[in-house]
Length: 115
Length: 111
Image (tube, rainbow over the protein chains, first blue to last red):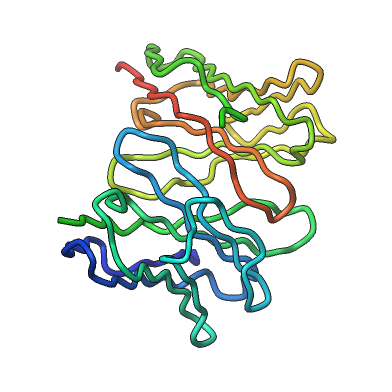
């Protein structure tokens, strides 16, 4: 069964450093998303991406964040200068875009720890 | 921002009985509602969804009910099994749009 994959599973970084989180969405899916979950809190939407551009972003997704689909398979989230409060689980998700199918399928997540 | 709320942080049921998880929402513009199951340190796993034009959707042991007038949905699991023990999130969205999640309900199914 196709699945969303994410690397690395755990990333530890120093405050102020840049990190890139990587995702491989399900093949043939058209919509891609990043979410995060701070420990003990709900899962929060960060950004959605369709047709090679951002379709929606939350207020969390400020100028320190960017997304890219550098090739036909990878979808990346970059945080330019990490802050302590960026420590969270980051989940990538994808959606087929087919009419009537709204399910988003999530990857296993990347645990980001900012020291 | 409390557009989707799960007011019960936890639920405990006996194996074989029915589990009922509840969710309320405030935004009448939502088109789709979904339930996800999540284990610690894993991503949410899709369980079942329902369109706003329906009031019930069933998939095996899982049934989701939608009451639009009350802005309420529920997930029924019958019969409950110990392997169902996890955190359950409801979520709402427009088509292919962002998911807005509730806070989650931890279900424990006792053997």
